[in-house]
Length: 503
Ligand SMILES: Nc1nc2c(ncn2[C@@H]2O[C@H](COP(=O)(O)OP(=O)(O)OP(=O)(O)O)[C@@H](O)[C@H]2O)c(=O)[nH]1
Ligand SMILES: [Mg+2]
Image 1: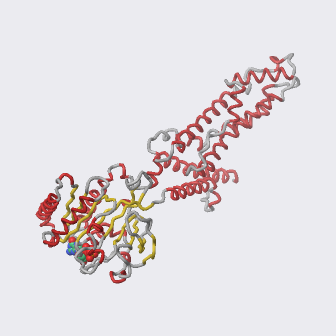
Image 2 (image 1 turned 180 degrees about the vertical axis):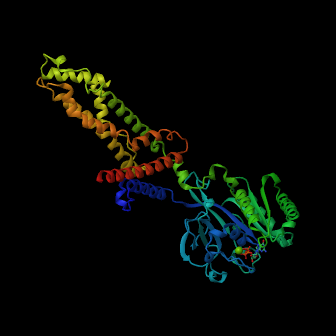
Image 3 (image 1 turned 90 degrees about the vertical axis):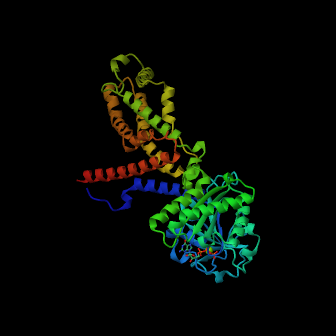
Protein backbone atom coordinates (compact mmCIF):
# COMPACT_ATOMS: atom_id res chain seq x y z
CA UNK A 1 0.00 0.00 0.00
CA UNK A 2 1.36 3.41 -0.85
CA UNK A 3 1.51 6.07 1.82
CA UNK A 4 -0.63 8.97 0.70
CA UNK A 5 0.88 12.39 1.18
CA UNK A 6 -1.79 14.49 -0.44
CA UNK A 7 -4.28 15.84 2.11
CA UNK A 8 -7.03 15.76 -0.53
CA UNK A 9 -6.84 11.98 -0.22
CA UNK A 10 -8.22 12.34 3.29
CA UNK A 11 -11.48 14.14 2.61
CA UNK A 12 -13.33 12.62 5.56
CA UNK A 13 -10.55 13.41 8.03
CA UNK A 14 -10.37 16.93 6.67
CA UNK A 15 -14.09 17.43 7.12
CA UNK A 16 -13.93 16.34 10.75
CA UNK A 17 -10.84 18.45 11.44
CA UNK A 18 -12.49 21.53 9.95
CA UNK A 19 -15.67 20.90 11.93
CA UNK A 20 -13.68 20.52 15.14
CA UNK A 21 -11.81 23.73 14.39
CA UNK A 22 -15.17 25.48 14.06
CA UNK A 23 -16.14 24.02 17.44
CA UNK A 24 -12.89 25.22 19.02
CA UNK A 25 -13.35 28.70 17.51
CA UNK A 26 -16.86 29.01 18.86
CA UNK A 27 -15.83 27.75 22.31
CA UNK A 28 -13.00 30.26 22.28
CA UNK A 29 -15.35 33.10 21.32
CA UNK A 30 -17.96 32.22 23.93
CA UNK A 31 -15.62 31.44 26.79
CA UNK A 32 -13.31 34.42 26.55
CA UNK A 33 -12.34 35.58 29.96
CA UNK A 34 -13.30 38.93 31.34
CA UNK A 35 -11.87 40.81 34.31
CA UNK A 36 -13.23 39.75 37.67
CA UNK A 37 -13.21 41.97 40.74
CA UNK A 38 -11.68 39.30 43.00
CA UNK A 39 -8.08 40.03 44.00
CA UNK A 40 -5.26 38.89 46.25
CA UNK A 41 -3.08 41.89 47.14
CA UNK A 42 0.49 41.56 48.30
CA UNK A 43 1.16 44.15 51.00
CA UNK A 44 4.19 45.12 53.09
CA UNK A 45 7.06 47.43 53.75
CA UNK A 46 9.38 48.42 50.92
CA UNK A 47 12.03 45.81 50.12
CA UNK A 48 10.17 43.21 52.20
CA UNK A 49 10.23 40.82 49.24
CA UNK A 50 6.72 41.28 47.74
CA UNK A 51 7.91 41.36 44.16
CA UNK A 52 10.43 38.61 44.80
CA UNK A 53 7.62 36.44 46.14
CA UNK A 54 5.64 36.81 42.92
CA UNK A 55 8.76 36.12 40.85
CA UNK A 56 9.41 32.96 42.86
CA UNK A 57 5.82 31.82 42.39
CA UNK A 58 5.54 32.47 38.68
CA UNK A 59 9.17 32.70 37.53
CA UNK A 60 9.16 30.13 34.73
CA UNK A 61 6.14 31.71 33.09
CA UNK A 62 7.65 35.19 32.89
CA UNK A 63 9.91 36.05 29.92
CA UNK A 64 13.18 37.60 31.20
CA UNK A 65 12.46 41.04 29.75
CA UNK A 66 9.16 41.21 31.60
CA UNK A 67 10.55 40.11 34.98
CA UNK A 68 9.24 42.60 37.57
CA UNK A 69 12.11 44.58 39.00
CA UNK A 70 12.97 43.52 42.52
CA UNK A 71 15.97 45.20 44.06
CA UNK A 72 17.51 46.52 47.22
CA UNK A 73 16.02 49.99 46.68
CA UNK A 74 12.35 50.80 46.91
CA UNK A 75 11.18 49.63 43.57
CA UNK A 76 7.54 49.00 42.84
CA UNK A 77 5.75 52.27 42.05
CA UNK A 78 2.56 51.27 40.30
CA UNK A 79 0.42 48.38 41.39
CA UNK A 80 1.21 45.37 39.23
CA UNK A 81 -1.78 43.18 38.41
CA UNK A 82 -0.84 39.64 37.49
CA UNK A 83 -3.56 37.64 35.81
CA UNK A 84 -4.24 34.99 33.18
CA UNK A 85 -3.52 35.44 29.49
CA UNK A 86 -2.68 32.91 26.77
CA UNK A 87 0.69 34.62 26.28
CA UNK A 88 2.81 36.81 28.55
CA UNK A 89 2.06 40.48 27.86
CA UNK A 90 2.94 43.50 29.96
CA UNK A 91 0.78 46.59 29.58
CA UNK A 92 0.44 49.98 31.20
CA UNK A 93 -3.23 50.51 31.98
CA UNK A 94 -5.44 53.25 33.34
CA UNK A 95 -7.54 51.78 36.13
CA UNK A 96 -8.60 53.44 39.31
CA UNK A 97 -10.45 50.69 41.15
CA UNK A 98 -10.62 46.92 41.00
CA UNK A 99 -14.14 47.25 39.62
CA UNK A 100 -13.48 49.88 36.95
CA UNK A 101 -12.57 48.75 33.43
CA UNK A 102 -8.93 48.71 32.43
CA UNK A 103 -7.92 50.93 29.55
CA UNK A 104 -4.71 49.81 27.88
CA UNK A 105 -2.36 52.72 27.35
CA UNK A 106 0.80 50.97 26.21
CA UNK A 107 2.23 47.55 25.58
CA UNK A 108 5.65 47.36 27.22
CA UNK A 109 8.46 45.20 25.88
CA UNK A 110 10.59 45.53 29.02
CA UNK A 111 9.67 45.81 32.67
CA UNK A 112 10.07 49.52 33.43
CA UNK A 113 12.42 50.84 36.12
CA UNK A 114 10.74 52.91 38.81
CA UNK A 115 11.96 56.22 37.28
CA UNK A 116 10.34 55.49 33.92
CA UNK A 117 6.92 55.62 35.58
CA UNK A 118 7.08 58.92 37.45
CA UNK A 119 4.67 60.53 34.97
CA UNK A 120 1.89 58.17 35.98
CA UNK A 121 -0.28 58.73 39.03
CA UNK A 122 -0.23 55.48 41.05
CA UNK A 123 -3.84 56.04 42.09
CA UNK A 124 -4.99 56.02 38.47
CA UNK A 125 -2.54 53.72 36.72
CA UNK A 126 -1.37 50.14 37.05
CA UNK A 127 0.79 47.69 35.20
CA UNK A 128 -0.78 44.44 34.05
CA UNK A 129 1.15 41.27 33.35
CA UNK A 130 -0.74 38.39 31.79
CA UNK A 131 0.69 34.88 32.14
CA UNK A 132 -0.48 31.45 31.00
CA UNK A 133 -1.17 30.37 34.59
CA UNK A 134 -4.52 28.53 34.76
CA UNK A 135 -4.80 29.10 38.51
CA UNK A 136 -5.46 32.75 37.67
CA UNK A 137 -8.76 31.79 36.08
CA UNK A 138 -11.99 31.71 38.05
CA UNK A 139 -13.99 29.23 35.96
CA UNK A 140 -17.31 29.99 37.63
CA UNK A 141 -16.92 33.73 38.00
CA UNK A 142 -15.59 35.91 40.82
CA UNK A 143 -18.37 35.20 43.29
CA UNK A 144 -19.26 38.89 43.48
CA UNK A 145 -22.22 38.92 41.12
CA UNK A 146 -24.55 36.22 39.79
CA UNK A 147 -22.58 36.16 36.55
CA UNK A 148 -20.96 32.70 36.52
CA UNK A 149 -18.94 33.18 33.35
CA UNK A 150 -15.16 32.61 33.66
CA UNK A 151 -13.27 35.56 35.11
CA UNK A 152 -9.68 36.64 35.60
CA UNK A 153 -8.30 36.51 39.14
CA UNK A 154 -5.77 39.20 40.04
CA UNK A 155 -2.68 38.82 42.16
CA UNK A 156 -1.61 42.39 42.83
CA UNK A 157 1.88 43.51 43.75
CA UNK A 158 1.74 46.81 45.58
CA UNK A 159 4.32 49.50 46.34
CA UNK A 160 5.81 49.11 49.79
CA UNK A 161 5.24 51.62 52.53
CA UNK A 162 7.97 53.65 54.26
CA UNK A 163 8.98 54.84 50.84
CA UNK A 164 8.94 58.50 51.78
CA UNK A 165 7.90 60.69 48.91
CA UNK A 166 5.32 58.53 47.30
CA UNK A 167 1.73 59.75 47.04
CA UNK A 168 0.33 56.23 47.15
CA UNK A 169 2.38 55.17 50.14
CA UNK A 170 1.41 58.37 51.98
CA UNK A 171 -2.28 58.13 51.19
CA UNK A 172 -4.87 56.44 53.40
CA UNK A 173 -3.47 53.02 54.11
CA UNK A 174 -6.77 51.24 53.66
CA UNK A 175 -6.75 52.42 50.08
CA UNK A 176 -3.99 50.01 49.21
CA UNK A 177 -4.11 47.55 52.06
CA UNK A 178 -7.11 45.65 50.78
CA UNK A 179 -8.91 45.18 47.51
CA UNK A 180 -12.54 45.82 46.70
CA UNK A 181 -13.39 42.10 46.90
CA UNK A 182 -10.66 39.86 48.34
CA UNK A 183 -9.81 36.23 47.92
CA UNK A 184 -6.99 36.68 50.43
CA UNK A 185 -4.47 39.28 51.49
CA UNK A 186 -0.78 38.47 51.42
CA UNK A 187 1.40 40.24 53.96
CA UNK A 188 5.16 40.18 53.43
CA UNK A 189 7.82 41.15 55.96
CA UNK A 190 11.57 40.76 56.20
CA UNK A 191 12.45 38.60 59.20
CA UNK A 192 14.71 41.31 60.58
CA UNK A 193 11.81 43.78 60.59
CA UNK A 194 9.23 41.40 61.98
CA UNK A 195 9.42 42.90 65.45
CA UNK A 196 10.26 46.48 64.54
CA UNK A 197 8.05 49.15 66.06
CA UNK A 198 7.09 50.86 62.83
CA UNK A 199 6.15 47.52 61.35
CA UNK A 200 4.01 46.73 64.39
CA UNK A 201 2.06 49.96 63.84
CA UNK A 202 1.67 49.20 60.13
CA UNK A 203 0.67 45.63 60.84
CA UNK A 204 -2.10 46.88 63.12
CA UNK A 205 -3.30 49.23 60.38
CA UNK A 206 -3.14 46.40 57.91
CA UNK A 207 -5.08 43.98 60.12
CA UNK A 208 -7.65 46.70 60.70
CA UNK A 209 -8.05 47.05 56.94
CA UNK A 210 -8.26 43.27 56.63
CA UNK A 211 -10.91 43.08 59.38
CA UNK A 212 -13.03 45.59 57.51
CA UNK A 213 -12.44 44.29 54.00
CA UNK A 214 -14.87 42.31 51.91
CA UNK A 215 -13.79 38.68 51.46
CA UNK A 216 -15.12 35.91 49.28
CA UNK A 217 -15.21 33.69 52.38
CA UNK A 218 -13.78 34.44 55.85
CA UNK A 219 -10.86 36.89 56.17
CA UNK A 220 -7.84 35.03 54.81
CA UNK A 221 -4.27 36.07 55.44
CA UNK A 222 -1.11 34.60 53.95
CA UNK A 223 1.68 35.91 56.17
CA UNK A 224 5.11 35.58 54.57
CA UNK A 225 8.35 36.12 56.48
CA UNK A 226 11.26 36.49 54.04
CA UNK A 227 15.02 36.24 54.56
CA UNK A 228 14.33 33.61 57.18
CA UNK A 229 16.94 30.81 57.37
CA UNK A 230 15.35 27.36 57.46
CA UNK A 231 16.73 26.62 60.93
CA UNK A 232 14.95 29.67 62.37
CA UNK A 233 11.67 29.01 60.64
CA UNK A 234 9.80 27.20 63.49
CA UNK A 235 10.80 29.86 66.03
CA UNK A 236 9.89 32.70 63.67
CA UNK A 237 6.58 31.11 62.86
CA UNK A 238 5.73 31.18 66.54
CA UNK A 239 6.77 34.79 66.92
CA UNK A 240 4.78 35.78 63.84
CA UNK A 241 1.72 33.89 65.05
CA UNK A 242 1.82 35.51 68.50
CA UNK A 243 2.36 38.93 66.94
CA UNK A 244 -0.51 38.67 64.47
CA UNK A 245 -2.95 37.27 67.01
CA UNK A 246 -2.01 39.89 69.62
CA UNK A 247 -2.67 42.67 67.12
CA UNK A 248 -5.83 40.96 65.87
CA UNK A 249 -7.17 40.78 69.42
CA UNK A 250 -6.43 44.49 69.88
CA UNK A 251 -9.08 44.89 67.16
CA UNK A 252 -11.50 42.89 69.30
CA UNK A 253 -11.47 39.99 66.91
CA UNK A 254 -11.27 36.32 67.87
CA UNK A 255 -8.49 34.12 66.55
CA UNK A 256 -10.94 31.73 64.90
CA UNK A 257 -12.32 34.58 62.79
CA UNK A 258 -9.07 34.71 60.86
CA UNK A 259 -7.92 32.12 58.37
CA UNK A 260 -4.18 32.55 58.93
CA UNK A 261 -1.45 30.82 56.91
CA UNK A 262 2.17 31.39 57.94
CA UNK A 263 5.24 30.90 55.73
CA UNK A 264 8.83 31.56 56.82
CA UNK A 265 11.14 31.38 53.82
CA UNK A 266 14.51 32.45 52.51
CA UNK A 267 14.28 32.79 48.75
CA UNK A 268 18.04 33.38 48.60
CA UNK A 269 19.01 29.91 49.80
CA UNK A 270 15.94 27.84 49.05
CA UNK A 271 16.52 24.64 47.04
CA UNK A 272 14.26 23.81 44.13
CA UNK A 273 12.36 21.17 46.05
CA UNK A 274 11.67 23.42 49.02
CA UNK A 275 10.56 26.14 46.62
CA UNK A 276 8.18 23.72 44.93
CA UNK A 277 6.68 22.75 48.29
CA UNK A 278 6.32 26.41 49.19
CA UNK A 279 4.60 27.12 45.86
CA UNK A 280 2.15 24.25 46.29
CA UNK A 281 1.32 25.28 49.86
CA UNK A 282 0.97 28.92 48.89
CA UNK A 283 -1.43 28.23 46.01
CA UNK A 284 -3.41 25.80 48.08
CA UNK A 285 -3.86 28.32 50.89
CA UNK A 286 -4.65 31.08 48.42
CA UNK A 287 -7.23 29.16 46.42
CA UNK A 288 -8.81 27.33 49.36
CA UNK A 289 -11.67 29.84 49.78
CA UNK A 290 -12.72 29.04 46.21
CA UNK A 291 -13.69 25.56 47.35
CA UNK A 292 -13.55 22.36 45.39
CA UNK A 293 -16.02 23.18 42.70
CA UNK A 294 -13.63 25.72 41.28
CA UNK A 295 -10.73 23.31 40.93
CA UNK A 296 -11.76 23.14 37.27
CA UNK A 297 -9.22 25.51 35.82
CA UNK A 298 -10.33 25.36 32.22
CA UNK A 299 -13.02 27.81 31.09
CA UNK A 300 -14.07 25.33 28.37
CA UNK A 301 -14.96 22.77 31.01
CA UNK A 302 -17.13 25.05 33.05
CA UNK A 303 -18.76 26.35 29.86
CA UNK A 304 -19.47 22.80 28.69
CA UNK A 305 -20.95 21.90 32.05
CA UNK A 306 -23.28 24.86 31.85
CA UNK A 307 -24.65 24.07 28.40
CA UNK A 308 -28.44 24.34 28.27
CA UNK A 309 -30.37 21.08 28.32
CA UNK A 310 -31.35 21.43 24.66
CA UNK A 311 -27.65 21.25 23.78
CA UNK A 312 -27.26 17.75 25.17
CA UNK A 313 -26.05 15.61 22.27
CA UNK A 314 -27.20 12.41 24.03
CA UNK A 315 -30.79 12.36 22.73
CA UNK A 316 -29.97 13.00 19.05
CA UNK A 317 -27.14 10.42 19.21
CA UNK A 318 -29.56 7.88 20.69
CA UNK A 319 -32.15 8.81 18.06
CA UNK A 320 -29.63 8.06 15.28
CA UNK A 321 -28.98 4.66 16.80
CA UNK A 322 -32.73 3.97 17.02
CA UNK A 323 -33.09 4.78 13.31
CA UNK A 324 -30.22 2.46 12.40
CA UNK A 325 -31.68 -0.32 14.53
CA UNK A 326 -35.03 0.09 12.78
CA UNK A 327 -33.35 0.14 9.36
CA UNK A 328 -31.48 -3.09 10.11
CA UNK A 329 -34.60 -4.72 11.45
CA UNK A 330 -36.61 -3.84 8.33
CA UNK A 331 -33.78 -5.03 6.07
CA UNK A 332 -33.55 -8.26 8.05
CA UNK A 333 -37.22 -8.93 7.41
CA UNK A 334 -37.07 -7.90 3.77
CA UNK A 335 -35.93 -11.37 2.80
CA UNK A 336 -37.64 -14.55 3.83
CA UNK A 337 -35.45 -17.50 2.91
CA UNK A 338 -34.01 -16.42 -0.39
CA UNK A 339 -37.05 -14.51 -1.56
CA UNK A 340 -38.01 -10.88 -1.18
CA UNK A 341 -41.70 -11.57 -0.77
CA UNK A 342 -41.59 -14.95 0.86
CA UNK A 343 -44.05 -17.71 -0.01
CA UNK A 344 -45.71 -15.65 -2.72
CA UNK A 345 -45.95 -17.04 -6.20
CA UNK A 346 -47.87 -16.40 -9.33
CA UNK A 347 -50.31 -19.25 -8.70
CA UNK A 348 -51.56 -17.64 -5.53
CA UNK A 349 -52.36 -14.50 -7.53
CA UNK A 350 -54.32 -16.24 -10.26
CA UNK A 351 -57.60 -14.66 -11.15
CA UNK A 352 -56.69 -11.25 -9.74
CA UNK A 353 -56.48 -8.15 -11.90
CA UNK A 354 -53.44 -5.86 -11.70
CA UNK A 355 -54.85 -3.80 -8.87
CA UNK A 356 -55.83 -6.85 -6.89
CA UNK A 357 -52.43 -8.44 -7.43
CA UNK A 358 -50.57 -5.37 -6.35
CA UNK A 359 -52.76 -5.05 -3.28
CA UNK A 360 -52.27 -8.66 -2.25
CA UNK A 361 -48.49 -8.62 -2.71
CA UNK A 362 -48.22 -5.30 -0.90
CA UNK A 363 -50.20 -6.65 2.07
CA UNK A 364 -48.00 -9.73 2.20
CA UNK A 365 -44.88 -7.56 2.02
CA UNK A 366 -45.99 -5.32 4.88
CA UNK A 367 -47.00 -8.32 6.94
CA UNK A 368 -43.56 -9.78 6.34
CA UNK A 369 -41.91 -6.49 7.38
CA UNK A 370 -44.04 -6.47 10.50
CA UNK A 371 -45.33 -2.97 10.00
CA UNK A 372 -48.29 -1.03 8.67
CA UNK A 373 -48.18 1.16 5.59
CA UNK A 374 -48.15 4.15 7.94
CA UNK A 375 -45.20 2.76 9.92
CA UNK A 376 -43.23 2.26 6.75
CA UNK A 377 -44.13 5.72 5.48
CA UNK A 378 -43.04 7.20 8.78
CA UNK A 379 -39.67 5.39 8.60
CA UNK A 380 -39.21 6.64 5.03
CA UNK A 381 -39.87 10.26 5.99
CA UNK A 382 -37.99 10.27 9.30
CA UNK A 383 -34.74 12.24 9.47
CA UNK A 384 -32.05 12.17 12.17
CA UNK A 385 -32.49 14.89 14.78
CA UNK A 386 -30.69 18.16 14.26
CA UNK A 387 -28.79 20.28 16.78
CA UNK A 388 -29.79 23.93 17.34
CA UNK A 389 -27.98 26.21 14.86
CA UNK A 390 -26.24 28.07 17.69
CA UNK A 391 -24.84 24.82 19.14
CA UNK A 392 -21.01 24.91 19.22
CA UNK A 393 -21.00 21.48 17.58
CA UNK A 394 -23.44 22.37 14.81
CA UNK A 395 -20.76 22.27 12.08
CA UNK A 396 -19.52 18.88 13.28
CA UNK A 397 -23.05 17.56 13.50
CA UNK A 398 -24.03 18.80 10.06
CA UNK A 399 -20.88 17.97 8.10
CA UNK A 400 -19.88 14.81 9.91
CA UNK A 401 -22.73 13.22 11.78
CA UNK A 402 -25.68 14.00 9.52
CA UNK A 403 -23.63 13.46 6.33
CA UNK A 404 -22.70 9.96 7.53
CA UNK A 405 -26.27 9.28 8.69
CA UNK A 406 -27.49 10.12 5.21
CA UNK A 407 -24.95 7.75 3.67
CA UNK A 408 -26.12 5.02 6.00
CA UNK A 409 -29.85 5.54 5.68
CA UNK A 410 -30.41 6.73 2.12
CA UNK A 411 -29.60 3.33 0.52
CA UNK A 412 -32.05 1.68 2.92
CA UNK A 413 -34.79 4.12 1.98
CA UNK A 414 -33.87 3.74 -1.69
CA UNK A 415 -34.26 -0.01 -1.36
CA UNK A 416 -37.74 0.21 0.20
CA UNK A 417 -38.76 2.75 -2.40
CA UNK A 418 -37.62 0.39 -5.13
CA UNK A 419 -39.51 -2.47 -3.48
CA UNK A 420 -42.68 -0.37 -3.54
CA UNK A 421 -42.09 0.31 -7.24
CA UNK A 422 -41.35 -3.34 -8.00
CA UNK A 423 -44.65 -4.27 -6.37
CA UNK A 424 -46.43 -1.53 -8.33
CA UNK A 425 -44.90 -2.85 -11.56
CA UNK A 426 -46.57 -6.24 -11.20
CA UNK A 427 -49.09 -7.20 -13.90
CA UNK A 428 -50.91 -10.46 -14.69
CA UNK A 429 -48.22 -10.87 -17.34
CA UNK A 430 -45.46 -11.17 -14.73
CA UNK A 431 -44.41 -14.79 -15.02
CA UNK A 432 -41.89 -15.46 -12.29
CA UNK A 433 -42.41 -13.43 -9.12
CA UNK A 434 -39.09 -14.22 -7.33
CA UNK A 435 -37.16 -13.51 -10.56
CA UNK A 436 -39.05 -10.19 -10.96
CA UNK A 437 -38.11 -9.05 -7.47
CA UNK A 438 -34.55 -10.36 -7.64
CA UNK A 439 -33.89 -8.46 -10.84
CA UNK A 440 -35.34 -5.25 -9.45
CA UNK A 441 -34.12 -5.42 -5.85
CA UNK A 442 -31.04 -7.57 -5.33
CA UNK A 443 -28.36 -4.91 -6.03
CA UNK A 444 -30.15 -2.22 -3.99
CA UNK A 445 -30.58 -4.68 -1.14
CA UNK A 446 -26.89 -5.47 -1.08
CA UNK A 447 -26.03 -1.77 -1.01
CA UNK A 448 -28.50 -1.09 1.79
CA UNK A 449 -27.08 -3.89 3.94
CA UNK A 450 -23.55 -2.59 3.46
CA UNK A 451 -24.59 1.00 4.26
CA UNK A 452 -25.88 0.15 7.76
CA UNK A 453 -22.83 -1.88 8.65
CA UNK A 454 -19.64 0.16 8.47
CA UNK A 455 -17.20 2.02 10.68
CA UNK A 456 -19.60 4.97 11.18
CA UNK A 457 -22.55 2.84 12.23
CA UNK A 458 -20.21 0.94 14.56
CA UNK A 459 -19.24 4.31 16.07
CA UNK A 460 -22.91 5.21 16.59
CA UNK A 461 -23.40 1.95 18.44
CA UNK A 462 -20.30 2.48 20.62
CA UNK A 463 -21.38 6.06 21.33
CA UNK A 464 -24.49 4.81 23.14
CA UNK A 465 -22.24 3.73 26.00
CA UNK A 466 -20.84 7.21 26.59
CA UNK A 467 -23.86 9.47 26.17
CA UNK A 468 -25.14 8.82 29.66
CA UNK A 469 -21.81 9.73 31.24
CA UNK A 470 -22.57 12.62 33.64
CA UNK A 471 -19.57 14.77 32.68
CA UNK A 472 -20.43 16.61 29.46
CA UNK A 473 -16.77 17.05 28.55
CA UNK A 474 -16.21 13.30 28.56
CA UNK A 475 -19.11 12.70 26.21
CA UNK A 476 -17.95 15.43 23.84
CA UNK A 477 -14.27 14.42 23.97
CA UNK A 478 -15.11 10.77 23.30
CA UNK A 479 -17.38 11.61 20.37
CA UNK A 480 -14.74 13.94 18.91
CA UNK A 481 -11.98 11.36 19.24
CA UNK A 482 -14.11 8.58 17.81
CA UNK A 483 -15.12 10.75 14.86
CA UNK A 484 -11.51 11.63 14.05
CA UNK A 485 -10.46 7.97 14.24
CA UNK A 486 -13.43 6.80 12.19
CA UNK A 487 -12.86 9.43 9.48
CA UNK A 488 -9.19 8.55 9.30
CA UNK A 489 -10.02 4.85 9.11
CA UNK A 490 -12.60 5.43 6.37
CA UNK A 491 -10.08 7.48 4.36
CA UNK A 492 -7.44 4.77 4.67
CA UNK A 493 -9.98 2.15 3.76
CA UNK A 494 -10.99 4.09 0.63
CA UNK A 495 -7.38 4.59 -0.42
CA UNK A 496 -6.64 0.94 0.13
CA UNK A 497 -9.64 -0.27 -1.86
CA UNK A 498 -8.70 2.04 -4.75
CA UNK A 499 -5.15 0.70 -4.72
CA UNK A 500 -6.44 -2.87 -4.71
CA UNK A 501 -8.85 -2.28 -7.57
CA UNK A 502 -6.10 -0.57 -9.63
CA UNK A 503 -3.96 -3.67 -9.50
N1 LIG B 1 18.20 36.41 50.37
C1 LIG B 1 16.94 36.79 50.23
N2 LIG B 1 16.66 37.91 49.53
C2 LIG B 1 15.37 38.27 49.41
C3 LIG B 1 14.32 37.51 49.98
N3 LIG B 1 13.17 38.14 49.69
C4 LIG B 1 13.50 39.23 48.97
N4 LIG B 1 14.81 39.34 48.79
C5 LIG B 1 15.55 40.39 48.11
O1 LIG B 1 15.24 41.59 48.77
C6 LIG B 1 15.22 42.67 47.87
C7 LIG B 1 13.89 43.40 47.94
O2 LIG B 1 12.87 42.56 47.47
P1 LIG B 1 11.67 43.09 46.60
O3 LIG B 1 10.91 41.88 46.22
O4 LIG B 1 12.10 44.01 45.55
O5 LIG B 1 10.89 43.90 47.69
P2 LIG B 1 9.49 44.62 47.56
O6 LIG B 1 8.75 44.26 48.78
O7 LIG B 1 8.87 44.31 46.28
O8 LIG B 1 9.93 46.15 47.64
P3 LIG B 1 9.24 47.46 47.01
O9 LIG B 1 8.83 47.12 45.63
O10 LIG B 1 10.27 48.51 47.07
O11 LIG B 1 8.08 47.76 47.89
C8 LIG B 1 15.50 42.07 46.51
O12 LIG B 1 16.86 42.20 46.20
C9 LIG B 1 15.14 40.64 46.70
O13 LIG B 1 15.85 39.77 45.82
C10 LIG B 1 14.67 36.33 50.74
O14 LIG B 1 13.82 35.59 51.27
N5 LIG B 1 15.98 36.02 50.81
MG1 LIG C 1 8.24 45.47 44.79
